[in-house]
Image 1 (cartoon, helix red, strand yellow):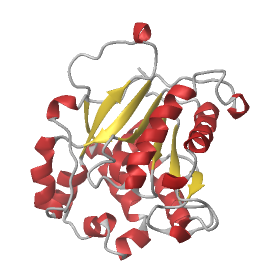
Image 2 (cartoon, rainbow, N blue to C red; image 1 turned 180 degrees about the horizontal axis):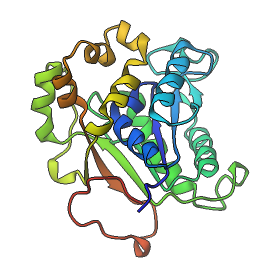
Image 3 (tube, rainbow, N blue to C red; image 1 turned 90 degrees about the vertical axis):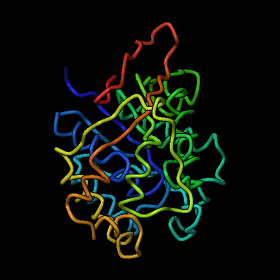
Length: 258
């Protein structure tokens, strides 16, 4: 069965590599079309250039940027509103246009907590993406944003509670860590065959590494600890189609499917 085309939507440059870099590389290597929409930062900024390099490594095409400002970095998109402050309808419409143009089989984004750190931009990206994944298939919504297209599934990148102690061993305890009960995880994906690409993509975000954010911590880890931190990706499947059309998922998936 061919790998489904995949469109990922994340809040900031580097989120795509940290949260779903393995799955993106895996699908691209299998011949699927893959792409990434980034909610914050603008074209022409240093982090946009780093994002382009990371996506090249992952085989995910050119950056697709909504162009809003990071909630904590106003200069990330000069003259543009913060993503969290922008009208919700505007953000959903912009993302719907990308979905209808790309026509993905599946999508990936942050979980409802916004991942481990719970950053407000992550949470809002989850909110906007869930709405857009539904709206993209409704022909009377946003008719100027392209022909309707309904993704078959939306996967939420997450961390099960059982994985948190191991992550703390590698990166140290954080002030706030959001995780979900293990039984909520529907896909556990071993991405170690694509780990080299994933790490290279993470390290392409050089400004984040230089300021001591997570890419910088990863740069200093030995190979075994990098694999322990990044070698598995976890997802919760959300299916934005009518109940009658859903195909039940039995057990925990080991890959993302349409």
